[in-house]
Length: 227
Ligand SMILES: C[C@@]1(CC(=O)O)C2=NC(=C\c3[nH]c(c(CCC(=O)O)c3CC(=O)O)Cc3[nH]c(c(CC(=O)O)c3CCC(=O)O)/C=C3\N/C(=C\2)[C@@H](CCC(=O)O)[C@]3(C)CC(=O)O)/[C@H]1CCC(=O)O
Ligand SMILES: NC(=O)c1ccc[n+]([C@@H]2O[C@H](COP(=O)([O-])OP(=O)(O)OC[C@H]3O[C@@H](n4cnc5c(N)ncnc54)[C@H](O)[C@@H]3O)[C@@H](O)[C@H]2O)c1
Image (cartoon, rainbow, N blue to C red):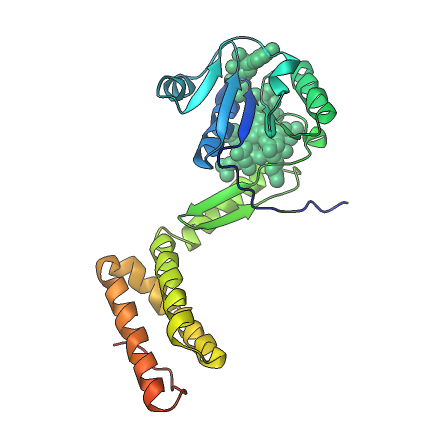
């Protein structure tokens, strides 16, 4: 079995085409919008949500059946109609144009697949079964959502801020690693969950104290816990 290569692609401003206007096309178009892509959707029918996106200018909806010229100048394409033959035509036109193509009913035609995703702000956890059984990916996503709750969005934002401070104020790489290890402890995640309003200040105070203590001791620190 050939392993697929995982990538985090920046689609901001990229022209992306979705063919079809049903439930699956809606889900795919939704995630493309979320990634900042310029979405064009071609379909003679559309879900109420797709129509709303079109009315508010979030996507361009072309209200007709697919033509192969629709592929022209597109970066990435999703064939999401309920007609296997149409999806195959979209695939063929994409291959001729050397484009990224996802065919929702024929995994073997996809040169990229969409994984199931847990989203927590900057944190994304992706699950793929290589198309073997998307329902298993969905189940694992639901399990992971229990473990990595919404507090991870705040926790990661704070960790990003602390990392910046440490890079600026802590020259000693060993010490930086030690502090980072402390901040990875579960207590900080708990703090973000239980005291989200105070978490930032407590983390900043802790870090400041650690840095001051280490300066006094000439660079080393016995990492304590905040209290
Ligand atoms: C992860 C997720 C991402 C997304 O689509 O955003 C995704 N499918 C999701 C949901 C979902 N898929 C299906 C159902 C219906 C109920 C069920 O069967 O459970 C539901 C649930 C629903 O629709 O609500 C059935 C299904 N899926 C595919 C086929 C065709 C085939 O296998 O032949 C069929 C049979 C259709 C039929 O028989 O009618 C094909 C693909 N689906 C993939 C991804 C790619 C492989 C990913 C991987 O495994 O690595 C791949 C190959 C292509 C692609 O789409 O990229 C998203 C989960 C979001 C979440 O986490 O909730
Ligand atoms: N990959 C996945 O995650 C996944 C999940 C569930 C189902 N599926 C597959 O995806 C397919 C689509 O599912 P759905 O629930 O969105 O179907 P649906 O019936 O709700 O929607 C199909 C859409 O395709 C459009 N369409 C049909 N012919 C077209 C053409 N020639 N040009 C442009 N648009 C055209 C229709 O107007 C309609 O909007 C299903 O056939 C199923 O096999 C895939």
